[in-house]
Length: 189
Image 1 (cartoon, rainbow, N blue to C red):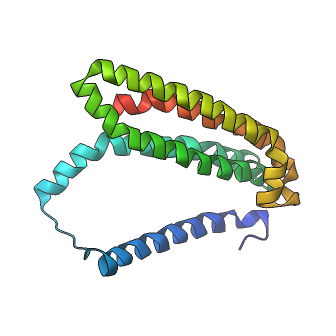
Image 2 (cartoon, rainbow, N blue to C red):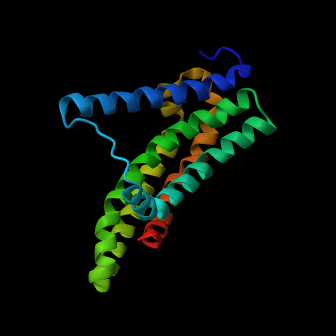
């Protein structure tokens, strides 16, 4: 769909369309193959749901903004192909960050429960998780840095070779996020 640097808006529209189609598919699949999808609009229940989910939702909105703000900054200040040289490595980074998000999202209920019931157990859980995330993150990030050129060529093709140095630096955000989320998620808990 994108043939010219001026077609940047099409990327956003395609992303929105793909999310809408994916969401519609999951709702229909749930409705026909699992449980019928029903919406009950009891105001008190909806307000309670908003109240309970507000802190977690706001942290995710801020997280998403901080991940995409650099891309918008590059696009508005420089534009053109430089946006692609930054955007391509950022897509790989965001995919890798999704695994870190999944890890912390699943650690969250255990962490919240231990924080209330057993503070010493929570401290041990966080120390162990931080150690595993740090060493695992260093290993994965170092490997991706050393393999940045073959990865970029494999995923995006030879035309994206200029984005290899960007990827080699940008991928270290993965380690930073893995470690920083050990502070963010307990604050939410």
